[in-house]
Image (cartoon, rainbow, N blue to C red; front, side, top):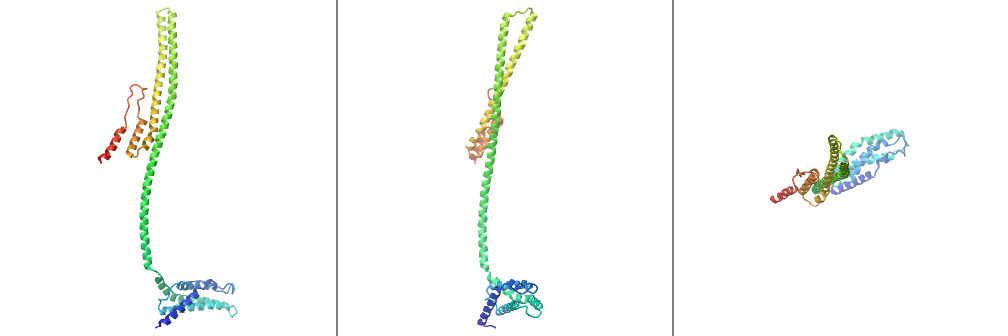
Length: 340
């Protein structure tokens, strides 16, 4: 059983060997430039890399808590690896059968892999567990969990906020689409009203011309009646009937033109009323924040657009009602909050 002093000496010796091996580069042991293209140690470089990698990892760990026998095994393995490296470095071509000697050394390096790696891997695994602070990992994991919960809660609130904003944006788009549709329909009715106004002017002109022609013809017939004397009763009857037919035709022209004029004026006034009602729709909607009131205004706008209104140009006009009045709708909307 080793004394503490002997154990400390062995630990320092093992650390020194590990430090020397950690500073060694495996690629420099190929010696391709120093020797020759055919005789070199490039085939031994992969084995050196794996063994030196374990030594480098163990050099970064604390071996102070290892058992004395394990320290001795580390020293033995590192010494054997160092001897192989020295043999490679000291090899020269000035000897008998240098190629055979080179191959022999390469084979020794490959065969020494298990004998060198086994004493180093167990201490490496033990020191890895000592280097790991499981309490710190647990604390960090709990901290990450708490942070993730906070982030998840904040993300949930953010999604709810986005949902509310999205619903508001969707409602705004719907309202904008409805208002745009109302404005478009208002322009359609206004254009149609202008067309009917032009048509009404034409029929008014036709009515005036027909009236003037009828008046002129009537005056002519009256003047002729004082000058012309029929020769017989048959001629008088034929003369009177021809006058009646001509006057009836002219009178029918006046009646027809006047009727079309009234119809065109009726359509002009009705479409203009519809356009005015729809163009004022936005002002009423924006003046209220209650959704039920907005819906009531929308219903009334639809009623103004699609229901006939009395204009005074048609005989026996009667206002038809196909949509509930605004007063009734608003009354129901106000009654609900009062009852609740």
